[in-house]
Amino acid sequence: MHGKGRFSDVPFFETVQEILSHYSCPSTCPAICCKIADINLDEKDMRILRQASKDEADRIESYNEDEEPLYKMHPPCPFLRSDRCGVYGMRPTMCRLFPFNISTMPDALLLFPCDMAASMFKDYVEYYNMLKNPVHAKTIDAFKQSHRSFAIRLNEGLPIQMLVIKIDELLPFKEYLGSRRVHSCSDNIPL
Ligand code: SF4
Ligand code: SF4
Image (cartoon, rainbow, N blue to C red; front, side, top):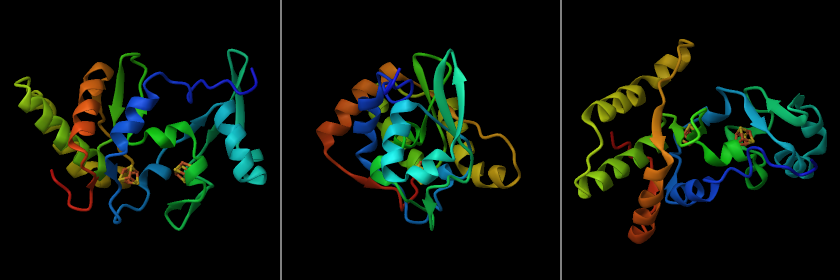
């Protein structure tokens, strides 16, 4: 089982990485994603984190599922340094996917409605409009509403509504972003 990657070997990982390479987080975001939820890690993630900081990695909670060793970091993440990731180049898979989250649906991901996600979602809507296959108005409104209210809801400990995105809709979107070759900084919040 050594080195097995329950999270790090997810099949859509490269697609999401390519999409995210076109965006960056706004300087104003205080690393919300590192402070709000548990981060699950597999053995492959842990092997890399141990190289970054063995002492801190050894303090991460471990558990077993189906006889596989897994790990869980509780928020705020112990690797957070002044609202920046202290192990950025070696961060776990779940962190590399954010603002996407793995869902229980095998054919879909969840999108957390932060500022970077809003920037991406604007392009996603534009792309599907261009294809004359528009994203449903209710979906757009629901995402806008989640984006506008998520900071308040987090402060109040209320659940955050995430957008469900089908993985097969991300593949053409990835190609489209690649053809545009534009990098979007999310400092100007578009929604
Ligand atoms: S992914 Fe979203 S929540 Fe995380 S730092 Fe970037 S903008 Fe903030
Ligand atoms: S490892 Fe880095 S990116 Fe991941 S939660 Fe911790 S500080 Fe954030």
